[in-house]
Length: 74
Image 1 (cartoon, helix red, strand yellow):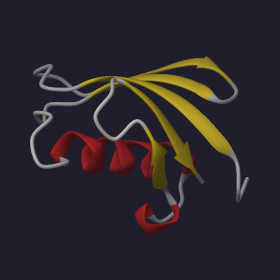
Image 2 (spheres, one colour; image 1 turned 135 degrees about the vertical axis):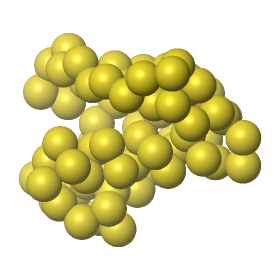
Image 3 (tube, one colour; image 1 turned 90 degrees about the vertical axis):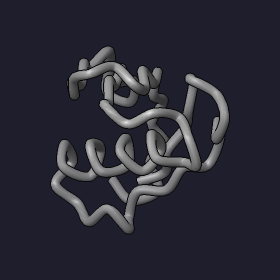
Image 4 (cartoon, one colour; image 1 turned 180 degrees about the vertical axis):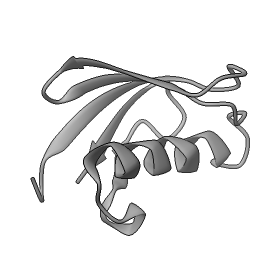
């Protein structure tokens, strides 16, 4: 698991929080936070850490800071 890269299709400011698994390393994640000042990115990081049952500090955004297509390292 450590060092794995996962692809996320982000849906910020959605009014609900939801995660859909599209594959072993591909997810769609809806979060309530808006895409302002990295708040949605932090919310997605939290959702991934809860899904994989790891500390949020172990989940790191590596690509797609301002895009809806993101890559996170675990």
